[in-house]
Amino acid sequence: MQQRDSEAAPPTLGVGMVGYAFMGAAHSQGWRTAGRVFDLPLRPVLAAIAGRDAAAVRAAAGKHGWAAAETDWRALVARDDVQLVDVCTPGDSHAEIAIAALEAGKHVLCEKPLANSVAEAEAMVAAAARARANGQLAMVGFNYRRVPALTYARRLIAEGRIGTLRHVRVTYLQDWLVDPDFPLTWRLEREHAGSGALGDLGAHIVDLAQYLAGEPLVGVSAQLETFVKERPLLQGASAGLTASGGAQRGPVTVDDAAVFTGRLESGALATFEATRMASGRKNALRLEINGELGSLAFDLERLNELSFHDHREPAATAGFRRILVTEAEHPYLEAWWPPGHALGYEHTFAHQARDLVEAIASGTDPVPSFADGLQVQRVLAAVEESAQKNSVYTPVQAVEAVQA
Ligand SMILES: NC(=O)c1ccc[n+]([C@@H]2O[C@H](COP(=O)([O-])OP(=O)(O)OC[C@H]3O[C@@H](n4cnc5c(N)ncnc54)[C@H](O)[C@@H]3O)[C@@H](O)[C@H]2O)c1
Image (tube, helix red, strand yellow):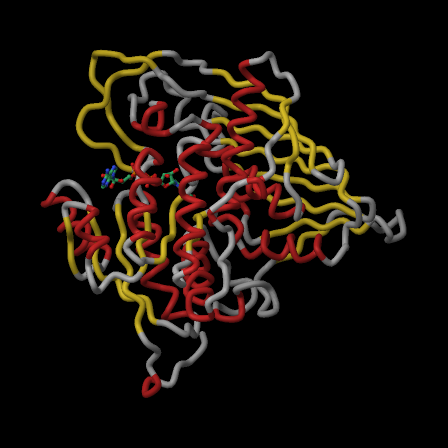
């Protein structure tokens, strides 16, 4: 761990978070940890969280280490001790909260997908551009970019280690919806979630594919399916991916699975599969990228490892080799444990907090930006359009066309 001179304590950055369930807990962990592990130019302070249930939000504040609790996110945005608003609510409230926070002069971190529609995402990009002029920064929470093995994969691709890209192949498989009696939580309702596996998991793999390749998708051809069309109505609250249902059933209004192909700007081909119906697969984000000179492969269920094949090596001894991405020279690892002392899912949120704090302190634009989030939103919209038209190839509108 890096040591800090306690006499030269950095100035603070007050954080306010809206929503405190699954992502709220993960982000809390990130905000609590980042400044204790990395030598940050600003010290994140967990100033306040907001939720709608007074007793529950107070309990969450105590559990996750927040100094104060609010029952209206508008009150949180208005607090003087909050300089950054972290949006950890379902997609239907991202635009409203993020835009209000930016207009109130706060920096914003917003969970993915950026919004529930392209129009909302465009409004958020415009708000972020206006706020940028006053020094406020905005970032979207595609945390998988901050898995060290994936950050390192991007570095290898950018250095040309696998040459010109040919194939980007990504799947994101989970199984928590296999049971037809899993209840109708917000993730299964279009009005709250925007889409199903597509926006939940597909957004991650679209962002990741474009981040790793260093170029956007320019068109897609897609199929969507909802296998279980009705589910039990929710009883009580849901948290994360756990919930219970009653006897009455209601309609599922989003996709259970999304399968699509895409073309990257350079002409490389991409394939995607996102489902919450792959029994036995818990959080299986897997990818393989093939280039002219070599290949890279990764599996989130073994997230400290990156497989690398150098096609220039003699065929007799060449092959995929496992890089254990825990060396001090690997991304983010300089501040963590000795080699081989593995990291996990939660560390991505500390890395996300670190990168955003450093961007704020230096006044540089953080990535992924709201414009990056809009670009992903446009891919998701093109996937839905293609699926409605029998998988016809559907172009993705470039983001440069958006005006602030
Ligand atoms: N980056 C990741 O790996 C990842 C993983 C899961 C979810 N997400 C994203 O994070 C967001 C939240 O998902 P989650 O899994 O934490 O959901 P969740 O259901 O576990 O938590 C949502 C929280 O938002 C609160 N909330 C809902 N509407 C609100 C409102 N209007 N005002 C105040 N609070 C409100 C709920 O009470 C709850 O605390 C979604 O956008 C989701 O896509 C990202």
